[in-house]
Length: 111
Image (cartoon, rainbow, N blue to C red; front, top):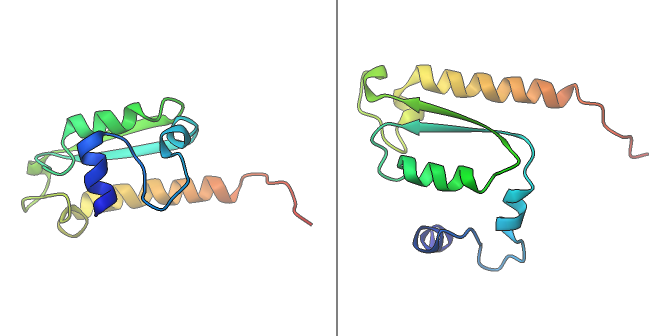
């Protein structure tokens, strides 16, 4: 929680007791990154999603905005996975598609 609080205050990603330079690492991400914005999410408002996605200049970014009316109950930062089966299924489909792509990639042998 302290790392998260520091990031919120400074806008810089770093973890205590880690030597990793997360800011540089994010600049080097070259994969698909999927952001799901839940309308009204006070813990991840659009400005925060913009800030994070801006740190991934080499990634292929997809953003979904999920409206409250698409769910039978009010969604928030934590409840969307339980309370919105449609959104959870969409996220699962992306994960499974990505896993299939990774499984079929040619990798060098490490014999």
